Length: 261
Length: 216
Image 1 (cartoon, chains in turn orange, purple):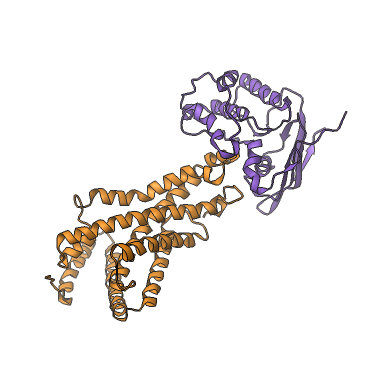
Image 2 (tube, rainbow over the protein chains, first blue to last red):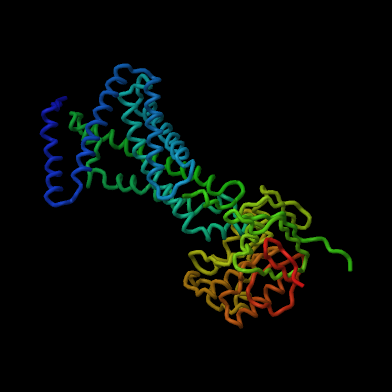
């Protein structure tokens, strides 16, 4: 395996691109140079911290530490998913976190323990990046599905109340919004799988090839990742609309749109 | 005259809006054959009252139909017998037939079936084919479709919120008489919110200043 190691000097050269973009912004009066610099600085700081954290965790290889980090990542993903929808309700963050956690841990467990067969089970080199990838994608599915669901129930309130007035149970009244929301949540992964390798070279595969892995091995990993992500998208989307549906239309069979802000 | 058993008893109903009571501890009692004209100034809470009866708005109300209690766990069954007909006359995407048929697909209504919709639609002056997309109907046509849906559903009680607001005089008389006749058949009753003067003399309840009173 041949890998070219990046030195700090290489990154310094790369930061020339940021200066170039910033210079363009100044010259063309786009007014984004400050935000660009802040974002670039955040990238450097956040990723460096993560690098140190990962080095530390890889070295310690302590299962509790690994789990702690996984929970923290799940929580952050849940928060982020809740911040992305246009409408909110008070306990929405718990629903997104729970949906994300269940979906990521279920899919993650199958992939790391059954498919890849990581030994020991918590080997951070595999468990953390894989779960990170699952969470980052489930986040997308969860927030899109939730947004579509809340949009449906608010814009089509009359239709849902018509169903309820005619004796529909929660499951019957919410069947169409569930379907619309989950379909919406799955679009990104379906698109990604459709164009994988034709229009886009998936990031993980590119990374593995750059790191010197044989292309076919990288492809195998990428296929695994795509399928795993599809599972995470689906579970996350279904989970979050189910949890949200229970809040919006509880056992009292009343559409509670007043909880939305 | 032998005392009749009440058909529907719902109460107490209380509603607040912005810290002020719209109505307080109101209850509704219907007897078989009742056709009640519910009146009241705009904003007095007529719609809220009807929606509370069927549980689309929150309330602490107890519901009894023919003496049987309907606790919250049996709400869908209650709604299948006591139907709220919304003022907006919502229609679903799809054709007229779909709009008439969907309620029968719900579990609570599996013992019911859609009977002869064409005849009733024709009586209401809707002679369009059943395959007509419902979204293409005018406001008045939608209102008649919504009324036809309610009548064909054959509940025991219809709580109709402004069912005639968009109808021309001829359709109004026809729609009214169908709804009025509905209440006369067996164990049935109708509550009808309307700003129109109704062609028949009916029992009239007025919701005003937070109470429900029978008009003299």
